[in-house]
Amino acid sequence: MPHVLIVEDSPDELAWMAEVAAGEGWTVATAEALRAARVHLARQQPDVLLTDLQLPDGSGLQLVDDLERPWQTQVIVVTGQASVDSVVQALRAGASDYLLKPLEVPKLQELLRRRSQDGPAPRPPVPSPQQRREAGRFGRLLGASPAMQSLYDQLARVAPTSATVLLIGASGTGKELAAQTVHELSPRRHGPFLAVNCGAISPQLIESELFGHEKGSFTGADRQHVGFFERADGGTLLLDEVTEMPMELQVKLLRVLETGTFVRVGTTEPITTDVRVIGATNRRPDQAVAEGKLREDLYHRLNVFPIRLPTLRERGQDIELLARHFLAELNRQEGTRKTFSPQAIARLYARPWAGNVRELRNCVQRAYILADDVIDGFEAEAPEPPAESGPDVVCIRIGTPLAEVERRVTMATLERCGNVKRRAAEVLGISLKTLYNRLEAYATRDRRRPGGDPGRAPGAQAPGPPRG
Image 1 (cartoon, rainbow, N blue to C red):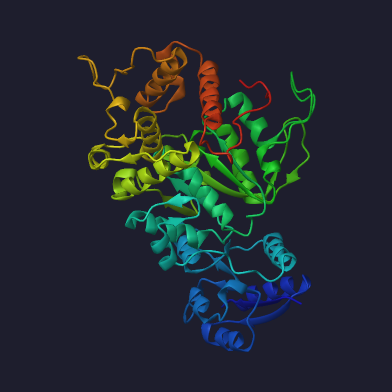
Image 2 (image 1 turned 90 degrees about the vertical axis):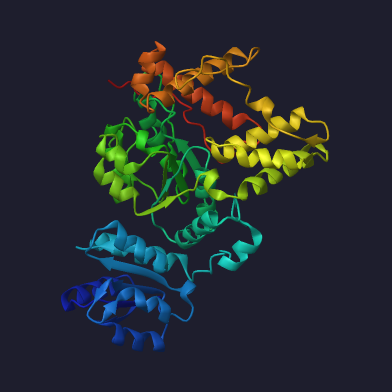
């Protein structure tokens, strides 16, 4: 039988938690302070350590250091402090989950049942800090700079847990790769990993895409559609640009995060899903809350373990490391042996890299195509601007395909409008629906390009219900 040690200084709460655990078929040991808990740990290491964060003689997190084989015990922290800091502190100290007071019996039962069904937990295959420094990479991420080592440490801490993660970083910093790394180093690694760009799907489609719809639920719904939350069951779902999700849908997302249930469009029957959600955004989420773009309660639910991704300029010599890696990939694919000249490397460090790693990859690929054997520079990628230039001017080379011209103008306008899509549509003289369709087409085109992210699912694949 699985064994749980419950540490709680309130006798009443301790008694009923023990009763719930025993009712689920667990053997139970209890303690009201650290000293008594350590006596129990010396006798038997539990499968689950359920401990209050605040105890009379210290923090319940101190017990993590007393575990002989910490990877075999799931540490669940109980706290009455619903603050992000306390939860992040617990997760970084080794907790795998947390419960907020007042405790809910179904929530505790669910955690115990899941642990009982999973059996003994194998040690997660997470490289040590020393191994990460020597390898210069972690999961799908590449980089040896101090900024990346700090990122690796945070990802390694949170990956084996079930905590919700919020990735914050500029476009091109590798948020999706970071999310895939968390998934692949988690107990869910054998389940699906799906990614959806919430900002690239029109408001009329996004509810159907996330939650699915029933046949006949609206005009054009000629068959049942299974949404992302249902397809990602047992795995991980990345909600990219989560701050761009329509406000009315944020309420439904909050419900899924809190209860694990949702309903398809066209029905009232709840569906249960077991999905770990990772949010990602290229803007400050607290600012999105202040601007009324993001619900405050959803922000706190997503912001359990926030991780900031560094820009390429913050990563120092990673610029050269990444450039050589991208060039080696191209040489291997094409059977060539092209190299960088010292001048080319120096020019790499002189660039601002506003587009971060994505811009660097594209830059290396263009330079590779234009060079013979030695890549001397990257001037062809950034032609001199015409006399008229400024924040409201887009420079386009003669001969650029019209589809690419449309894309650049659209994206530049969207950026100039602070990513406010309604305002950008007005400036461009198109409808909001047309703008959403363009963004969706751009995202699909990016995924089909060589070197695109195979794990990213399409933004929208089926018609959705009309919305006002």
